[in-house]
Amino acid sequence: MTAASLVSALPHYTSLRTRLWLFLVSGVVVLLLFPVEAWKVAVGGWVGLPVMVLLAVFLAALACEYVDSSMGMGYGTTLTPLLLLAGFAPLQIVPAVLLSELVTGLAAGLLHQHDGNVDFLHDPRARRTVLLLGSLSGVGALLAVWLALSVSRFWLGVLISGIVLAMGVVILATRRRQIPYRAGGIVAVGAVAAFNKGLSGGGYGPLVTAGQVVSGLPARQAVAITSLAESLTCLIGVAGYVAAGQSIYWALALPMTLGALLSVPMATHTVRQTSETTLRGLVGAVTLILGVVAGLKLVF
Image: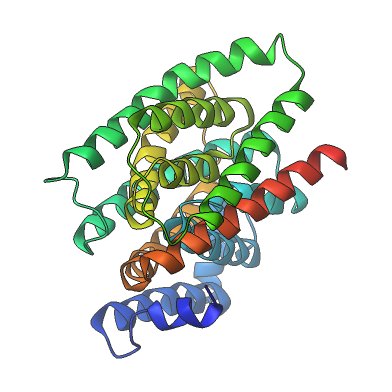
């Protein structure tokens, strides 16, 4: 469960995947860092943001989505506060985050399938889990609206932080043991996670990924399933914003989605090359850290 484990799990620099990835990422960076004047004016005028801001958003999304697609959590939880600190408005951020997670979740699901981390085509349990989690999204959103009007957000935050912390502890304590699969656990965690997503716009990954592992799914499958299930949840979120007349802030959504998409091939390969015990330990540790951070936010 070390940084060296993750580094060694990355594709070798001579592999076709790595060379193509380096070419695409460096190409975007070079175009943004050293644009010809006409390109600089065109991008600034069309997108509406300075080129250096676009580069910063692109790189931040690249890093955050790598963690998300390899650990099953952390994209919105990490990126949203950074964008708020950068001065973007919540209604500019949340729809853009949801759109980028919709696109990258589908891409990650396909690449996890390709890399052998999960088999959605022949594993009925994996398909059933995705459908369960996806179908709970709408129910969770409705519950979120109802409870947000009647229950203190502080106590809801305390409850959810406590659940995340507890699951992180359980995963770390049982990372070397096989836990029997329990569909009921998936349903319970999926409902809470979808509710939390509808209430706060974040926190889906830690609950769903950790909940699947605690319910007996291998960590590799849990990470892959979370990526695909979250894309379905984000689809509902994006549709809701559009139906309510809220437009997508493309100046933020485009560089964010591009950066996030380019991280996916490296992330799914990392999952394939990381041992089950190491991956369970990493998922447990990251879940525990995010639970602590969520709790500290409530206090401070």
